[in-house]
Image (cartoon, rainbow, N blue to C red; front, side, top):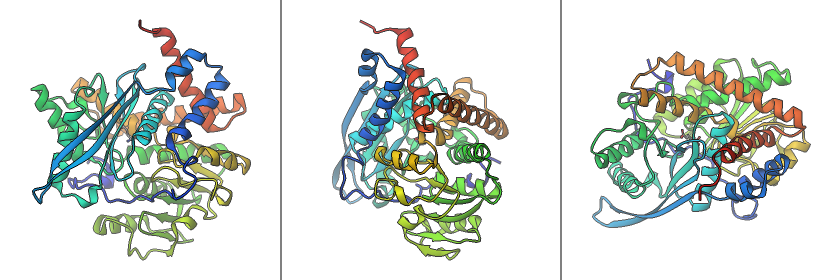
Length: 441
Ligand code: GLU
């Protein structure tokens, strides 16, 4: 049986279980491209990166912005804006998800594409990094509208797509069904079926077993390594998880099974605290039925802000960017921060967390399980030979565990944080390939 409790034939769009970042002020701090760049700059400085390479790696290779006309169900035409950014392809085809969200911007997509570049390099996958996004509110759209939007977006970026050039995957508010439409649209244009053009597809059409749970599973694996490293027992470690979508709910389930006590969970709508441990299967069942945690009765209702500052061993932000900022970092009481989301911590907040001695497993390592199994899916599609789920999970464990220790070793050698070490490892791997390949003239 594929994918454990989360594998079903239900391919509805995911619920919008994400906590919106607070962005009324301090716009500089919450600019995701600046957040990415300041970490990159620090790694580049420590690596003594040569000026030419520094200049290359500060720029996205290719940026596409398109208008996407869609015939809405009411007969009107609406025009959406979509982006696809290929940040760097020196190590292999560009790899990265597509998100549908009202907050999508070119800057955010560029930062996310750079993060994909560093993420693939940290876990040593033969991929570059890309990201796509469409500015829309999928919750307000019908399935037919979403299909037309997806197909027209795919047609608009088709020149970059391909198993050897740019391979999308699900991200915020996109899922297997959306990937099936991307794959079909691309295949219709190519005049033959090309399964390897996207990952995170339904298993029935070339998807990999274990892909749906992979990001949450990877989060669980690095949490265990972090706790072992710190000498904290995994069983009975207290955990708060912010975000209860595909990543947060899977991480909650797997950590719960390992004996952790999940005392806090929350989504965009509501957050809950239960010092005895939340009944995670009940929370998952509630979300399946109601599409959010709203109305869940397995704990005391708390605010989203209080969820982040609970007195727990492990805090897992598993939603969107910029939830840990200079405004709340001093109040974080967790000993370990596992960044399951992309960019949940602002660069300015890093120093505060470091001063407090919080052990941070950075996003580009902590959430790399998803793209790792995407890599397995791509390999299986190309070979036309599919692996059992236990093989997928074993190979995921091997890569996540090895990568965690690669980063930990570097962090100790250089006396730097896990984040800086992860960037150093990633940037040096990308830089090495640039040096070997030279600059084409
Ligand atoms: N969207 C996921 C991420 O941010 C997965 C990307 C992929 O599998 O290509 O890592």
